[in-house]
Image (spheres, rainbow, N blue to C red):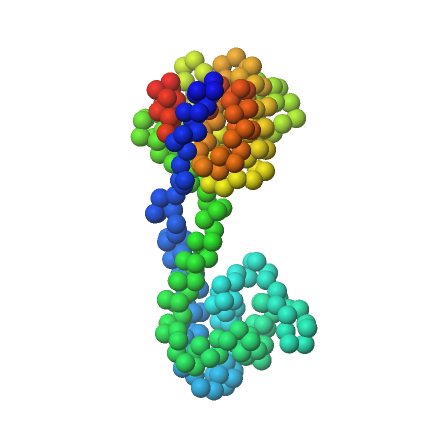
Length: 272
C-alpha cells in the first residue's frame, strides 16, 4: 500500500484550471447586458463640467439609472457593502442613490466626479465589462469544485461511461440505513451490471484543515458504503495541496480501497 500511495502522490497537479475557466465571459456579458440601458444613460455624465447640474437633470429624467452606480466601484447591491462618511455615519452604498444630492456625494467621495470630468472613462458599458471580468476572476475559488467535477465528467463522457451527477443518498435505501444520521450528496453515481459506484471528486491547490477533515470524513464513509453489497465508494482527488496533508491522506488509503487522481483515473475507467 505504501508503494501505491507514493505512486499516487508523485503526479499531483498544480492546477485543474484551463484557460476557459479563468473568466466566464457569457456570464460577464449577461451581467452587463442586464444594466446596459442604464449605463448608456449614465454616459451623459461623462465630460460634464458642472456635475451637480448634470446629475439633477438626469435625476429628473430617470432617477432609477443611478441604481447601478455601485458596479462602477466593483460593488454589487446584493452584497450590501457599507461605507463611513466624513462625519462618522455608516451607510449602505445603495443609500447614496436615494437622492440627487446623495448621488453627488457618492461621485465626489469615490472620485468618480473627476474621472467623469476628465473623460478617463469613454463608455460605461465597456468600463463595466472590464469591472465584471475582474469580479468574475475573484469568483474563481468558488468555481474550483465545479471545475473538477466538470473535468471528471468530460473524461467519463470521452470514454462513453454513463453517469448521474449530484445524487442524494436517499435514492438508495440500503445506503440510507448504512449511513445512519449522516447525510450525503454524491458528485457522481455510476451503475454497472454488478455494482453501483458512489463517487466524490475534489481538487486542492492549497493546504489547510479542510483537507484533514475531508480525508477523515471519507475514511469513515467508505467502509460504511463498501459494507453494503453491490455498492462501492470511490474518491477522485488531486492537487498539490495534499502535500501538506500527506500523512492524513496516507491514513485514508487504509480505509478507502478506491482512491484515484487525474493521472491514474484510467485505472477506474478500465475497471468500469
